[in-house]
Image (cartoon, rainbow, N blue to C red; front, top):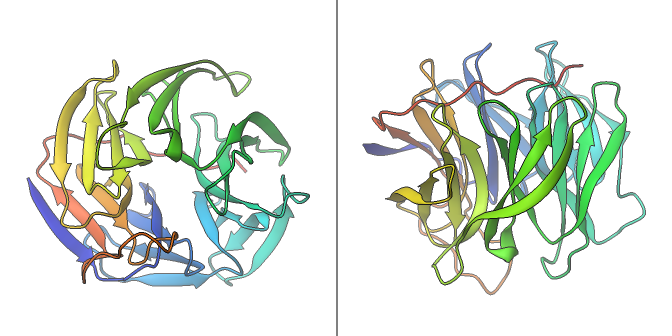
Length: 291
């Protein structure tokens, strides 16, 4: 196993790594820097797009030239060719204390995205599903910080965390309706150094989670037991995604400056995009939004 600093981008709050198998490019974001990044598997040919507010996640669209971006002010359409950002809808337009955060696309091309309390103090957030006809549906609420959405390889189990609950949950996921049910605790980080942030699932059905403030990437078996723990060179790792031409590189985002003022900053590697190679494990292609 080899951990490499792939891009020295110093993102204030790096998040949302997303590998696109069509273009063979890695995307990631700077949530507080209001920016979307794209690069090759080796971290070269870096491109950036500015967005008009804090960004929580992106979903690539099926047409290949655009994305849906989850901003503080709601869901927007981003055109990569022109850089234009157009409002789509805001599911929490009447709530001033929240913003949209982590999200991913399910096996049927729907974007599942959660919101968070911007002060990370109250359960004011919720989880939503944006369908290809651009209708939005609330799946659950009472969330402080939405993070880590991902699915089992067959798409019927949904994994998700409210970071400050310190638990990763599993739900039954109805692929036909896009609804969730039967929440149970998959695993807990209570009493450990870090708390759960972004996640992905590999081809064997194991869950990989970035444990922010602890500096670990943890691989969990589908029954919630710890299979592997990787110590990173920074404490504030935020999310993970398999990518590369063979889907065998684990990309890891991090933050240069924590959002809460009482938390210490990492050193010069903070905010970098990392790549972990030679794990002997492959990921699963991420779907595109179906519109």
